[in-house]
Image 1 (cartoon, rainbow, N blue to C red):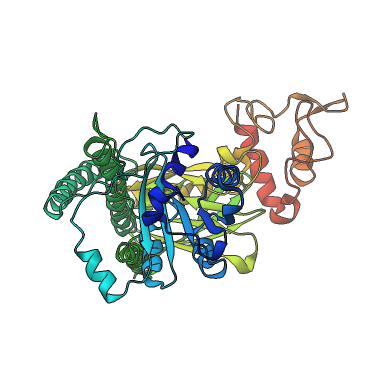
Image 2: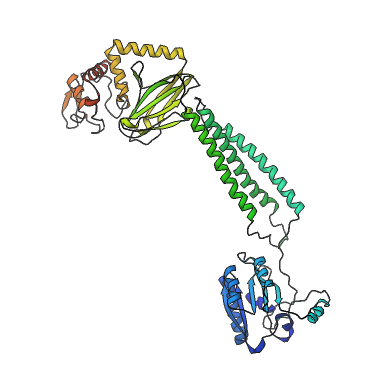
Length: 506
């Protein structure tokens, strides 16, 4: 096929009007421009075989920049351009060609067009020559006669022309696409909103946050529809029909579209950032008559203390429509307080000077769960606790019962202290296996230790296991799991209350 191209490049007398003459006995200087190495190397080899010293290939270029620079530095007489190479901007190339004043010929050759070519000849005419040229009858010049050795059919070739879309027809396509994008955006948005991706909003802080989520739904629906509808419409409407052989219009860029496509994301980021900052201000704004709850996190438990009454619970009880201020700290590593229905989340850090605050106002009565949202160790997945939102009357009744139990009963006090310190996270009271031995029926039983010895679970053993848990490790359980901090964090009275609670678990 490459040899077919040269049927248009004939230096004999039959084509001298088209290709010009080689003056002064110098060889013709040829420049080949194509990003396809096969195209360039093939033409160079054919030139060498066909014309020898009559034509010399002075350069092979693979980009528009290289081609324009070579036209200035190498000063070729003939430039052959790969018409099918989309990386070559033909409009820019021809604009540069027309602006020059040095004699030169250009040939645009198309492999896809079966060897078709478009030729240009740049030379200066005197006024009389220009007048003669204008008086030439308007006819289509046939292609040069082929040489016998090329065996090219005698046909008239025309370069393939891209299909042009009339302006009115183009507007019709944009209107159809706009309707499709709008309809698709509405349907996708409704689908996202009704899919219940988010749980019920159970706090006042969740309302502005959900508004921001809905804005993101709309943006997702629009961008999804914009991309997919353009692709679908293009595939259906602008596909190559049977019998069509032409090429579609090649568009390299549109500065106006690029400017708009850059400005719109910047504007969207600014809008979303502004809304997010406003929502954050609403979430952290202090309210009047806040009820304070001290939250303690540890591996792997949650403990809630109500400082006004001294009540401690492993479940977070809250009255509905009451502003709550949670002051949170950790006993060991970083944890994270997160109730999905409240939408807000706060990391809980170890250290007395790193107490974190989180404000919530429950608006929905029900049972929820506080889940640790920060990987905090082996039992992280099980670090959750109930969150109960009740009416003010039910909350007051629950609080009264808790206060009374703490005042009168050492077993109740031991139960509260054990929950406050996360004992229930490792020791069950119903016989189920856990990280540590179950407390059900433990008191007075024989325990087999890791070294093979046995010990009776009496008061002394339970006291030692609380203050120094690594001395006697029960067989089947790992050592260094239970923390050794309770000898400093618990008083002797509190330890005695915990032992009384363990005795009561039958």
